[in-house]
Image (cartoon, rainbow, N blue to C red; front, side, top):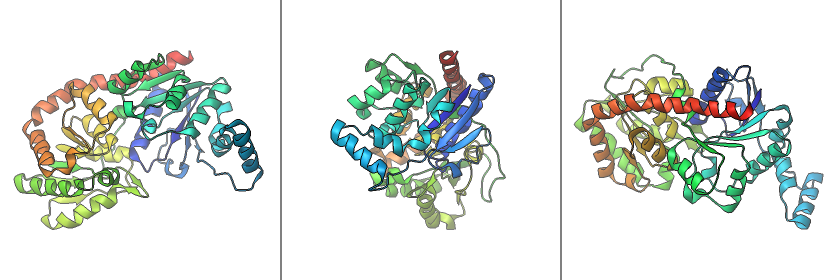
Length: 386
């Protein structure tokens, strides 16, 4: 069986990399003879993933003005009010690969949380036109993200795998009957433990991840995070490891974290992890932390899956749902409005420390079941194609 993953923006987002790595590993372990291919918008960034059978350039290609395609697309739009021709040319690199595949997995995870996606809708239509199986793999979607167009697109999937119960319940509530509940595949991803950097305290280091996306949505949060760092330095003897997890241009955690490093490096208790590590290497560091505070979902998954007590900053539907499935409640998940307050962040951290043992015990009890739900996704996929 030949499987193609698509709607992947590239592995400079280590969360996207984690999804591809872990999904490929799970599929190959559970489905004999499966070959897994990746259509990527930035294929040059994905060569770090070595268990794929092929990486394709799936980047959108704009239509050149006054070209034949441009004229035909304009005619279709004028006569039929239809953008399908234009979209098929823009997404042509991915669409051309469909005929060679048996199953196509849309793997973006939270792609449906960011408005309408006409290019991916067009790819999905082409998959179904060619009689291939179409799967939405490990998604999170909030009720505020739904629209009639999106719902129409979701109905054509042969299988939708929701990675947490909030999304699952919402989709079922919209009348979709093609939905199954699973967990994010990254809960099962391997880790690589590199040498610890100078200044790291074994068993007494807290990781801190922060993102430009959260900061831009709530500019006051930058000051609140700075105050949190000061609180940790003043009230504990912990070392703080600033931990980037996305290195995309214009969306680079390292750049934000570097500003904090420059402010506090003279303390000798704040260090900044490199920006070039892969997802398994970041997980290897996160696994050896005592606590973790993070805005990037897959950085927090790396922590949860290694039983590291974790606080989430600037939640989304996926963060809320994942926490609820682990703890039975939204445990230490602070909303985008809440993180503008220094007192909220400090209170959350103090709760993390105070309840360290209880949180660890809950993680040790819950995570094996969550990982089994990750594996269950492949079982659902196997049932679909058998």
